[in-house]
Image 1 (spheres, one colour):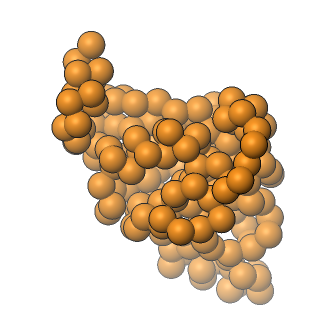
Image 2 (cartoon, one colour; image 1 turned 30 degrees about the vertical axis):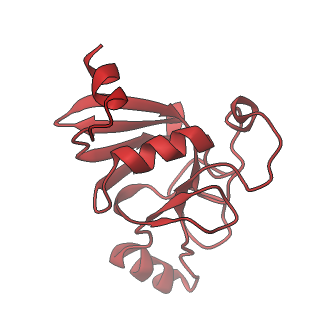
Image 3 (cartoon, one colour; image 1 turned 135 degrees about the vertical axis):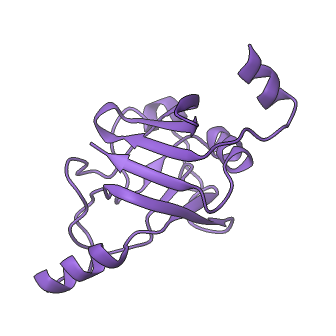
Length: 153
């Protein structure tokens, strides 16, 4: 009841962490360890394990930052994730590959005609985290840029 009232009033919740559980296909908005909001998500088409290189279709694992909103892209609104970090870059260089990048939380692909629930029933991104367009609007309203994101299996 309280969360309903806070969200309905337009007051921003104090989200201090976004937590992604890849194994459960869930993303949680957290405040001081308590779940404020839960989203069902779709991941990269090869979801298990940490992103190793560009084109592996994996969603990275680790601690990153949500650094900026993208309003004009191939997807309905998105938020950029600060992957790769220095460790990811060094590891990719050691292996002689590109770490990739352009990892985001985003809505559906522009022009997509499938129902959102269908789109969230399988992993289809190139490594990003996908939610519905309506959820993306809510996410951008509730989460300030600079908020940490923790992604784990």
